[in-house]
Each structure stands twice: as structure tokens, then as C-alpha cells.
Image 1 (cartoon, rainbow over the protein chains, first blue to last red):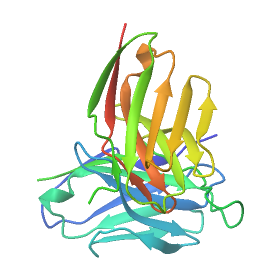
Image 2 (cartoon, helix red, strand yellow):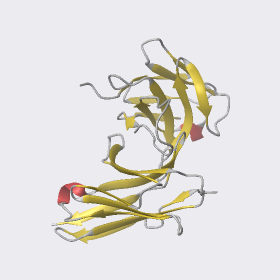
Image 3 (cartoon, rainbow over the protein chains, first blue to last red):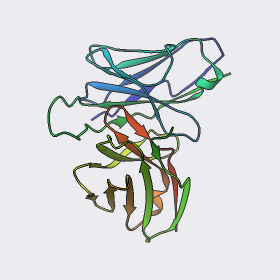
Image 4 (cartoon, chains in turn cyan, red):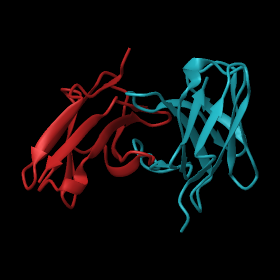
Length: 119
Length: 109
């Protein structure tokens, strides 16, 4: 059973460039969330995709955009890169819980991340 | 404004003893809590979770306790093993998950 995979593992870009990161969810999962983890911080929510639409978004500028494909895989795009965008980008997949007891959440499973360095 | 706080950046424990990792939250709307473990160069790995309708959940050596009135949860690892050495993140919420900054646990043989 393949877990969450991400590509590439590492990436170096210069300021102003654009980058695309990719994620394949765990088998059977239909929801993908993206997180940014800066050094010494916990992961911060960027956005979540379900049924090829952005379902929820965190406090990130429009330079951060995404896409989900019919096979549930997802891309994260960042335009006009800034030095402060250097971070570990994590993808997490889960199965949408459309019904069930309140307070329950389908556990999110994380990929190994893509480490982005902006020079 | 940090909604989930892990106030101890690091913790050292002897092998075989109990490790207690703490987490505080401010948002009373949070109804689900999780602990993740992270090794270097890997993504966070889900460890254990607890719903707000419970006050304790146990899975092998790992137990999570939730005190809703104090807005506090803790993760107990008994007995601690060297392989438990990692960064532990507390997360809360539903969608999205809100993470703490993590506590680095070192289990000394």
C-alpha cells in the first residue's frame, strides 16, 4: 500500500521564479492538504483540495495556488518566490468524512516533504 | 497568535522511564487532537488521536490525556525507548489542523 509521495525531494530556486510541487495521495484517499513548515516551526496550513476544488485556505497570499486532478493527485504552485518561502512543503492526504459522529476527523497522513530553498 | 502551544522545546528522558509531552490550546472550538512524530528528513507520522468527547486514549505504549477545562493535553510514552527520539507535534482542530512548534524528545540509553 503506497503511502503519500511527493516530488521533488529538494529544490533550489532564485527570487522571482516560480515553482511547482507534486503530491500523490495514499491509496484510497481523496483529499489533499498542503502545509508549509519553516525551520523551528510546526506545519502551517496552506490549503486543502477535495473533488478538484479548493475547500479551505489558510493565511497565505495568492502567490500560492494549487490544483487537484481527477486521480486525486495535487500540485502546489508558488509564483514570484521570496526568500521567506524557503521551507519544507508537506502534503497530507485523508479521506473526506461526509457523515459520522461530530468531533471526528479522518486522520491526515503526510508525505516526506519537498525542501525548497530560495536564493 | 498561537492557538496550539508546546512550551517545552526539548525533553531528555532515560530509557525505560516515562516521557510526558505537554500541549496547551486556546480555541475551545477545537474538537479533535492528534500527536505526530517526526524524524529528520521524513514527514510527520501519525501517532495517536483523541476526540473532545473523551479524556483518555491509549495505544500500546502511548496514552493521550485531554483536560478540556484546562485546555491541555499530554502524551505519555511508557516505557520510553531510544527509537522514540524524534520531534513530537501536537495538532488540534478539524480542517485545518493547527500545529504546535514541536518538542524534541531525546531518549538516552
